[in-house]
Image 1: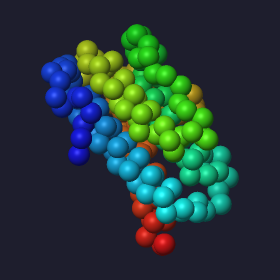
Image 2: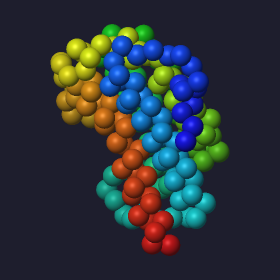
Image 3: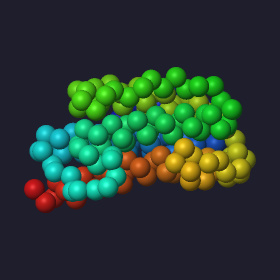
Image 4: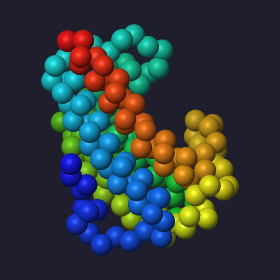
Length: 162
């Protein structure tokens, strides 16, 4: 598994927990994209759902990739850190073509912003997310790691049924 530029660089983190979450996010977002691309190639049908993120495989890919960028933007905002420079995700109609490029951009933008965050800022205070759930930074990082894992699992289940 490739860990973008993070493994070959000398980026330092004040918190080993933050470093671990950044590395795990990299690994699992890559795994999601790989699984998602296989689902697209095999024309997996998503089950009916009320959640608009499941409107199509393209929309699902866009949802996971744009959320990955959004988590870092939110963490930087609430911690008072500089804007990480995350560009907007491609349109759903272009996501299959542009997924790898956008994923690399997101993962590159994930590398440095939290480098100076100490352990003391990980568990308190809690912040309200855009979807109104309260998270401390540690739980937001865990959520960001689990999000692509959950969606890759769902796609793996659908791929098994083909």
